[in-house]
Length: 114
Image 1: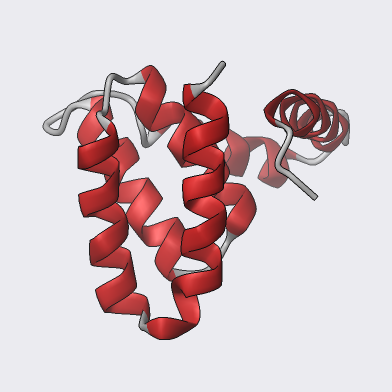
Image 2: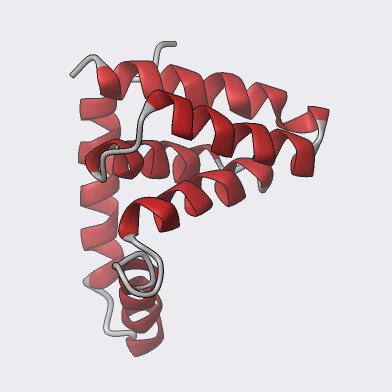
């Protein structure tokens, strides 16, 4: 089944809204930190998103990897920059990350074609 960026974005938005609808301060704080940490600071947002991409891929989280691929593109990262970040993830994560690397490139192609 091919990756559908529109379907994935809708699901992610709907489920994030569901999570945040809970009366749970810890959930809300964590979601806020998860957003805020990628804002520009000593490192620019593009660099932080490239780091997020590499870490997500090394940890083998397809959902996170897709999110960071999209955010890297939004922050102006080139395909070459993302490929270098993903290469670091491959070295850190080893060959077990290769299936996730395939899905990362599938997401890159899908988001880039929009």
